[in-house]
Image 1 (cartoon, one colour):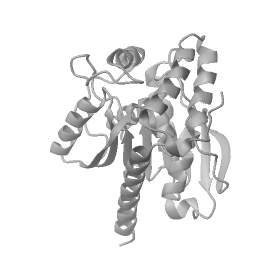
Image 2 (tube, one colour; image 1 turned 60 degrees about the vertical axis):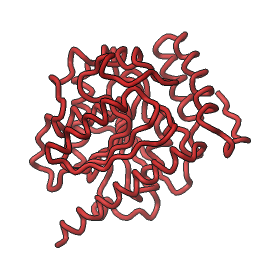
Image 3 (cartoon, one colour; image 1 turned 180 degrees about the vertical axis):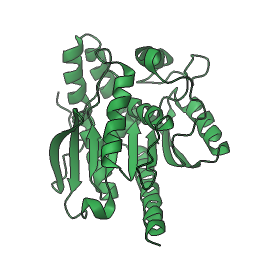
Image 4 (tube, one colour; image 1 turned 90 degrees about the vertical axis):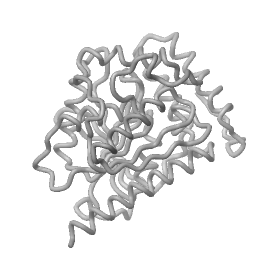
Amino acid sequence: MDIDRSDIEAWDIETFARRFQSGLDVISTLPLSAARNYYDTLCASFAPALPAVIQLHDDSISGCPVRHLRPAGGGKDSDRGRVVYVHGGGFCLGSVNSHQGIAAGLACELQREVVSIGYRKMPEARYDQAIADCRNVIDSLKPVAVVGDSAGARLIIDALSCLSLPQLEVTPVIGLIYPLVGTPHPDSLGDDAPLLSRADVMQAWSLIRAHAPTDNTHQVPASRMEVLAVEHDPLTRPLEREVQGWRESGADIGYRCAANMLHGALHAREQLPEMKMAWQQFCVALNDRLAQIACATRS
């Protein structure tokens, strides 16, 4: 798939929605293995070129594939700590390839090594196995932050809400980007939007429902979180309710919502000014929290 980048500065959200939806329409006609390959190509086609300063290295942790993205000059791992990233894709699509642009952007913004998890996907795997993959990587790396989008953000919530990590000196900061929260129901979701409908959400939920933890509404996954939502997304309404519940439970949460943006728009943040601004604010807030923790640890 080729994306014409000649008009990259002129893109608006309608252009992105039209181009991304055309790819999703193709995916809906393909068998799963081909759909996954096409989805990887579709998402990657919106990403900027990999910055020359980013060094890539593929590895595995406890049998789970991971991709290390390290910015040159970002300091030693022991000095700044790693960040774990968990990709989206509706629990059945997505990989370290589809979301490499987001993981690389995170590494550049935070100037830290980012480790992207290639967790097992449905329907071949069970959801609790995907949770185990994320837990094992987090437990092994002891990251300073864990960030995920969409399905990946839900995996973070479920992995950390019911996971005790006493061996970690500092509980990681959590970054959630348009996550699926709680137990969704058509009546609890927001309005349908381009690229994601309530039916899409319920279809994704059907893949994990049998092996998802029991209703974790308002169970706080971390004491410090940054949350990024988009205006037109059926997941935003329940997310805002959940954020309020987490705050009432004592969590310190920063929340921002990108005006006029859609679910998945983070892939094209360089073409979409509103998404780029919200993303940069999200990353600055994460960086500020990490700096505060570092100062507290040294004192």
